Amino acid sequence: MLADHFDVDELALDEPPMPSWNVAPRAEVLTIVDKDAARRLGRMRWGLVPSWAEDPGVGDRMINARAETLLEKPAFRTALERRRCIVPADGFYEWERIGSRTQPVYIHDRSGAPLAFAGLWAVWRDPATPDAPWLRSCTVVTTGANAMIAAVHDRMPVMLARDEWDRWLDRDMTDGEAVADLLRPAPDDLLELWPVSPRVNSARVDDERLIEREDPLTLFG
Image 1 (cartoon, rainbow, N blue to C red):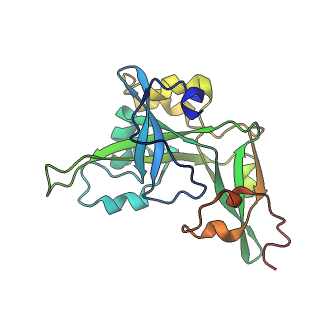
Image 2: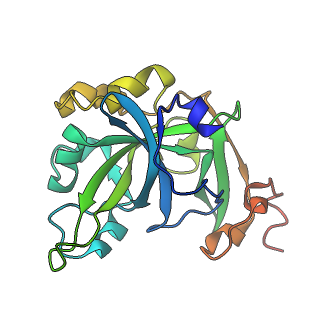
């Protein structure tokens, strides 16, 4: 169970999470945060909406945050210092260019274990509706690709090792520089990838067949 794998102390879920094989911006994703020195598993909207934003649509442009510029961007600097989270995932997709076409590939831990993406989060409320509920949102931190992923894409999510989770989540550690060493590419031998169907290109398609290995020679007919 995900909560057991991440040593979660508290569940903040109204209902059990439903699996998704094709998560799109604005979707609710699972996140793990530190709350009073305990790990809490809950949901946040994917696409960070800073507290000063006029409209939550700005989050569509903030699904990822580049590790190299976190301290330079106002939208991310405060979150790096005070609101870090883990975004658990079984894997992710990238698209490899082959001639004039792109081939989607599924990337995951070769052991089958969940990945722990380094994330940042924020809270926002419509300034025109002060009694509205708070919107909690998140972004995934990315870094340069390791040698394996570089053949497909030049960026990859930051993936935290188990012995790094406590330091990343520690809200008493408010110096962003103190966690900067964690924002590095994953080891080359951690992941494996394989080609999958171009059905994943449609956000309306969401089923477990999306991550099945496909023969790239037959995908385009």
